[in-house]
Image 1: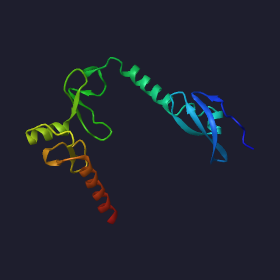
Image 2 (image 1 turned 135 degrees about the horizontal axis):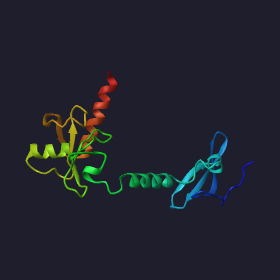
Image 3 (image 1 turned 45 degrees about the horizontal axis):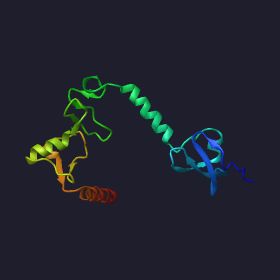
Image 4 (image 1 turned 90 degrees about the vertical axis):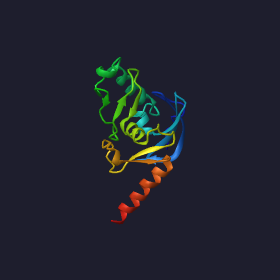
Length: 164
């Protein structure tokens, strides 16, 4: 027998209706979040407080923590600042600051622009031949005319790698 929790509030979520899906024999409920999104949550996660929103609560808290941590820290005061060069991001790309207002350009884009003698087009994508986002040697950079061609190149590389 399914316990009817229709209309019950759990944090930012309101249980709308049960689905046919189950998770460890628990009913999965369709819920509506205060932010307007719908999400599916197990009755157990609703009732024990494990899930209280569609994910918006976690995103808000994360951005609030970041805002407090880096409040007013620009340029030299920001922990990722390295004299105009930012520490590599999660893809290994290096950003260069253009101004104190927080504008930046990726180092590989700037190097390609210098190599070409012109600004990059909006569709153009710079590719690192060796796959190392921090290796911005001009000989290691290749220009694709659009992201579709860049994506197809990576798919071909994956296909080749699976043959080995």
